[in-house]
Amino acid sequence: MDRTLELRWFANEDTPPDRLHDWFDTLGDASQKERSDVYLLTAAPACNVKWRSGKIQTKRRVRAPNSAVTPTGYTGWQECWHKWSFKTDDAPPERDANLWVRMQKVRHQVTKLLPNDIVIKIELTRVKACNETAWSVCIEAESTSPTQPLADALGHAKYLWMNDLPADLPFSEDTSMGYASWLHSVADHPFDAAPSLADA
Image (cartoon, rainbow, N blue to C red; front, side, top):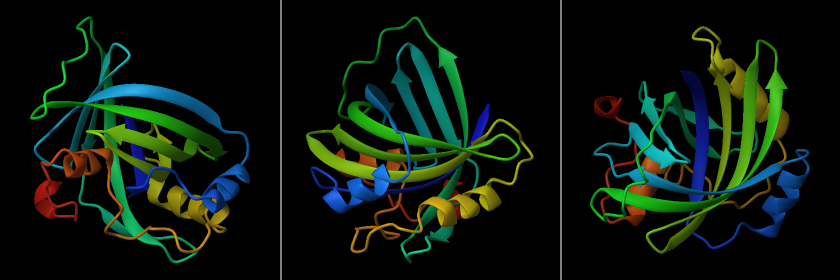
């Protein structure tokens, strides 16, 4: 099981602005992956289930999101997730507008290492689902240890690598959410993306 603390935003636009690409390029060498994932339309934003490359991957948000702010003043929600992965011999689920939805991704990701085996991942991703296209920026702290203080690590990472985020990006609490919430919004099955103790 992995633990991750994530701060993510979505913008329902075709491509990120050039100034965001310029900032991302300053972070260092990035890997690029193209993926086609099949997501389950779950009933709440605290649960994320997908089929990817012969595995079922699940994420459960373990508590209500916390308000977050970047050094440049952008606000959002930090979400703490526990993640599991299981191999399966089953074929990927067929698309069903009320159950399973395919999402195409082109992800650029920079990985940084902090002490105590905490991994920081910063990504710029283009996503498409239900004929809607968006781009997403995420910074996350990840660890396999149940005791590492991810909130401190993510706070440190924000000041190290998000200090020069360009101005006038559509980053706010309204656009900060996980994949499950964004997918529901474009699949016409919306639920409230704001944090609620009932969702955790």
